[in-house]
Image 1: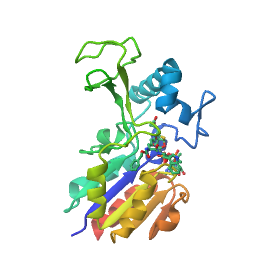
Image 2 (image 1 turned 135 degrees about the horizontal axis):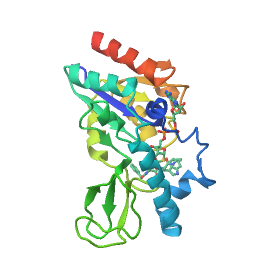
Image 3 (image 1 turned 90 degrees about the vertical axis):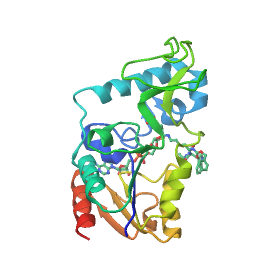
Image 4 (image 1 turned 180 degrees about the horizontal axis):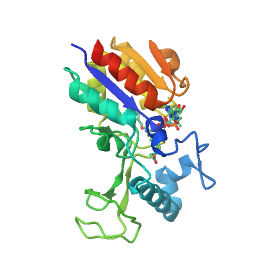
Length: 233
Ligand code: BJW
């Protein structure tokens, strides 16, 4: 029996052409990420926040962005491993799904979805939207916001995530800097419950001391290698 929990971050999508937060120096057009990715920032300047996510959505749906060998390797592990494989991502892109993974837990939300503050409905959106766009469910305008977990908001699926981490034998963290909580605390939780812990990243993360096994390099190299190892166990 070997249940695996995988946590991914921006580094797994870097070689697909999506900039990580650290690559961007935590800045977007001179705005701090905390300012565009927070409820306060949205209240202060909604147009800038809609523009920020519209620009990123356009990039994501363009032909320039495709799943890479790290995404497809994890989908292969999910298909071939005999026990439970839970895939948690902090990423708001859909590259795990495009790489063939199913049941991905997007703990920080999804760029291709919008949420209506008036009726709470969550709907698919591949095009731009803003404060004037009507909700497809209740038809009211002005209530749509990106379906994203901003700073200070509660990440999604936390009950299920904690349950899976408590029951896993192997916890692996891939392409995340370990600077944003609660995700950065998952490794300590997994260790506490007795799991073996693995880190795959370009460089040691802020929480690298919690890992039993580490492999540093580009995700498209280290992830397929790690998947082969897990399947060969
Ligand atoms: C490669 C690579 C390649 C590059 N191959 N690797 C003080 C102390 C502790 C906590 C707090 C605090 N003050 C506030 C908090 C809480 C706050 C927080 O953690 N803040 C920190 C900044 C200090 N967290 C929250 O507010 C969260 N909510 C919360 O805590 O609710 C209360 C709660 C309590 C108890 C339980 C549960 C909840 C919400 C966090 C929301 C984060 N949202 C964002 C933006 C929205 C999405 C978006 O617009 O895209 O999510 S922030 C941003 O950071 C984004 C990411 O998902 C997240 C993590 O970033 P990630 O993925 O690690 O990216 P990078 O860029 O940091 O790192 C990339 C890594 O890849 C690097 O290591 C590279 O080396 C590597 N890499 N190329 C492999 N080719």
